Length: 292
Image (cartoon, rainbow, N blue to C red; front, top):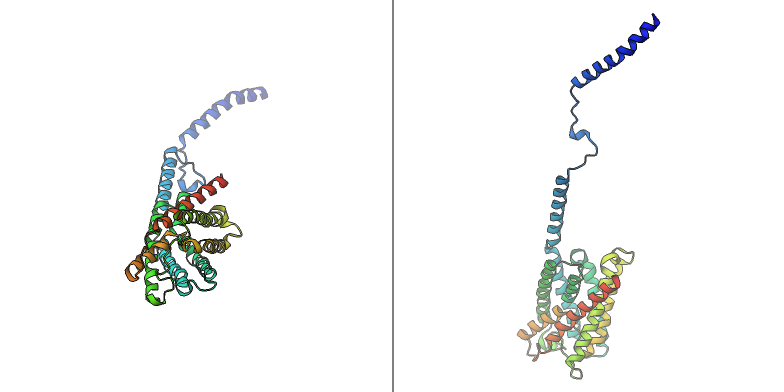
């Protein structure tokens, strides 16, 4: 009897197993909802669509122009011209005046860069803006907007100065317009403007962009930049009044042409544009070569 039982189990188990399998196939699979899956792989088409939308959003963000940045540049440039040129108008050609005016321009940049840095980075100089654009640290659209704001701010600052200092009290006679000294040539001034603007833009790129901006010494960048402006003025004031900033040269020339009797205010203007822009390009090239 035991043999019969074993024989029956051997032949009946496959039949029972087959029956259970058939019954399992008959049971419908449980539905799994998407919100019950913790990690779900996206289909290739969905992933590419997501990446495309993210890239489009990033592109839009990059191309967006900050009006706050432009407004900050306008305010800072207006105050910069009032402080720097105003200092020159009050003490020009007196004892120790070069040092005072150089300090005024340098300290003005430091304080204003701290003030508007959170909006625009505190460029306050179209040569600096140009250097940031060609080095890839600022979009072209934002650079153009900042440039327009700087130009308007320079004119506004010079106009305010014309109302602060009457012509007879202006020791420069021209609202501190830049002009090449009689003992120097245009070439002398051009070389000086190139080198001193290169100094300024190089300091900006090395202290206020990229990894340097987030380094422990990053918050000290405006001090280094202000010192560069001070040094440039100490060197160039005796040569051409020191521009290193085409927008600073432009506003006083416009207002002085309308409110002062000075002659030849625009004669040397090409130097005060070509020199700083060439110096900015030189600094951006050196910065790029060092960072490569």
